[in-house]
Image (tube, rainbow, N blue to C red):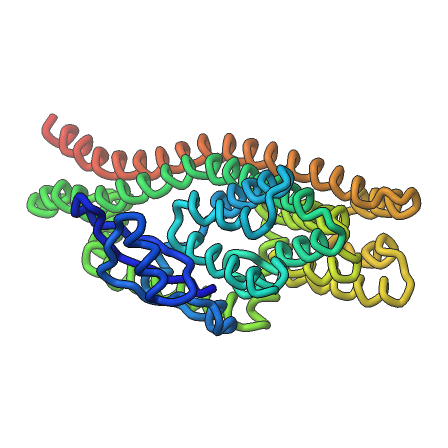
Length: 409
């Protein structure tokens, strides 16, 4: 059944907009009029062209993206409706009516249309990879095949919520240091380029011999004041140039992923996050009935590091040849010994999913505590650095004043 998007007026003259399912545009108009809604504009948003639905972008959709929070809430609601005995079509209908995000609302209506035409839910959501990644699709496919779709959706919601909580804690911990850095940098720039020249201009008018530290401060101030726009443009150009090199070229991606793992403070943290994401995702997929080889092919795309992804891909090939997962991963130094041992125990005892969840819990708690420790160290260090810069500026200005006082005496 086609899906129509409408703009309309109600009996009070208020403007409305939404979507409606109907056999034709005339039937859609009739449905709306029966509910005392009078359409002004009515257009079809059918998803018959499935490839277009996955790739088509517009300016409006760029500002109406579906967040992980909204996807998690929708997934949990669908799981609740299905576990309550409601058929899939009826559950999707209920979701469409209560979803606030217009982009997600339209997508769910199109998914409902495809399911109504005979497609599976997994096949229908696979046409929207921006909202439902391969990990999500394969779990739904496994749930449909095993008849446990409601349970799988519940696990999906829990997985997304865990990722969301961890990401929220990291962002909250880093927000204050980043804010301090930006404000401190802005204050120092303002002092150096606007305040210092006005004060040091007095010294130049008196033709007094200035201390070397003051001369250096004046040189830096004049340089920043004269070339600040060029410096800003240069920094922006370097940023976008490096971003292109490290994200758009294959060689650059490998170099950047290697650099990320080698960085002094953040390297071990990013490494633990990648291992935790690998363990959590693989454990969730296996627990939902996804075969190991399929799960590994999905997991390599979610670790966010090409070096680790290559190790997982090679492990998949060796597992297909009959090797154990722990044995293949142990050949690489990118997977810690504890992870290898836990996976080995899980393989031998038949509790691989549970062991992977324990590994993920362990590394996620380590990441959280490390982030808190790092941010607690960053705050005093940043205050100290800002204090040194401000102290340098104050001393550079006060020294000539002290020397003038001595000459007067």
